[in-house]
Image (tube, rainbow, N blue to C red; front, side):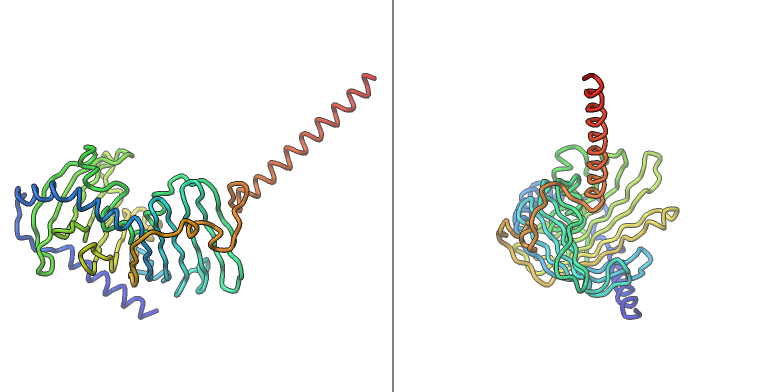
Amino acid sequence: MPHQAHRWLCLWATLLLLTTLPKTCEADDSDVRGTFLSEYPAARTKLQNAYSRVRVVGNYTRATDTGKFLWKKSFEILRDGPLFRIELTALESTRETWPVGSTQAVGGSAEKYFEIEKKLGEERYSINWFGAKDGFEGRMRTDCSPVLVAYSFGPVPLDEMLAGKTAKLSSVRPVNLNGVEVVEVTTESKQVDGTNADERYLFQRGSWALIDASATYKDLSGRVRLTGRKAVSYDGNDPPIVKTVDEWYELPTDRAGEKRGRRAFEVTTVQFGPIPADRFSLASFGLEEPALPTTGRRVFWTLVMSAGLLLTMGVWFAAAARRRRKIR
């Protein structure tokens, strides 16, 4: 797919340009720091409220860290507060597990999370998972980046990390990005797993929407465990409407086999407003909710264990009956 290789080469060349931003101020700017600390929490809350009820449609492309094309899918993301849903349909694919025309949908709630899929030619979705989901918020953050990235790079917004003392503000200063003054914020933070992170954010002034963020995660010995980056572009300003999200994660070279970290979202439609609750259910796909938490593997082993239990009970009752006959 030479056209795909050319597209990815252009994308990463563009992102490389963003890493060499000419700075208008090398030292921390106390006035800009004060403005950021006073304005950002309310602005972040406003963005979060706007993107807490939204429908986003577009295309999603995935590649390896070396730029090898994996797939391109259309997506529809729905969010209403804690409820999420994303539906993906393969448009181009190099993966046998994701043939062109196949569709997958995941979402719901933490208590009623579902994963369903339908391959090309199939009439109905099959249920791969239904039930409570540990790490639901993290899964949705990975899959639904365009509805979250405007106000937060990670699972916790920056102002909450600063207030909770899990992050320390290193610097705040104005920088120039393609002729436009933006605000650069750098922090140091400690993660729940004990690793440390050096983080850099670029924000629009006024809306304080996130336009670029990068982080380097290190273990206690100082060894780099992971680097990550997101770059966002917008249309409009009240609220800023996400247009593109480019993100990638890189692992150390000794873990190169695990790399699959480049993603690009191209957004074509953003609609703000409440989403009906039934859109986040299996019923919206013409499916009934199973009575018990369901996965293909879980159902199989549940049946095996149930059969084993019934067999054990049968043997026990038969033995008990023989003992009663002997007593008589």
